Amino acid sequence: KTDFINFISDQEWKSIEPVSSWFGPSSFLMSSMSALFQLSMWIRHCHGYLTENVGMPVWGSYAVFALATLFSGLILGLVSEALETDWLV
Image (cartoon, rainbow, N blue to C red; front, side):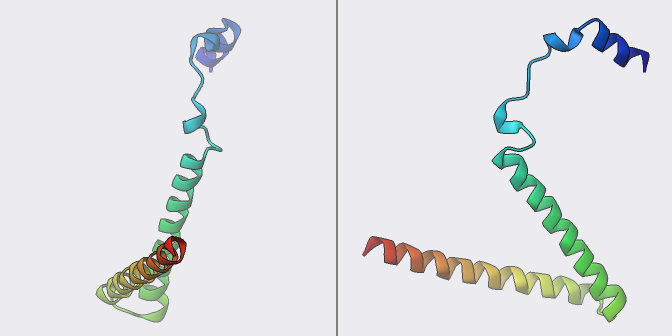
C-alpha cells in the first residue's frame, strides 16, 4: 500500500509510457481476445452440461465439438467461396 502511495505522490507514474491504442482494453484486438475467452467459457459450460446433466461420456462430448468444428468450417468455407464468386462476377 505504501509503495502505491509513494508511486502516486512522487509522480513516478509520469515516467511510464502509456499503452498503445492497439493494446488498449477497447481496441479491436483486445475485444477479439475477450470474445475468444468468452467462447471458450461457453464451450466449457456446454461440455459440463453434456457430461453432467445429459450423462454423455466425455469422448462423446469431444466428438460433438469435433463435428461442430468440422461443419462450421465447411459452412464458412462454402459461404466465403460463394461471396468471392459473386464479387468477382
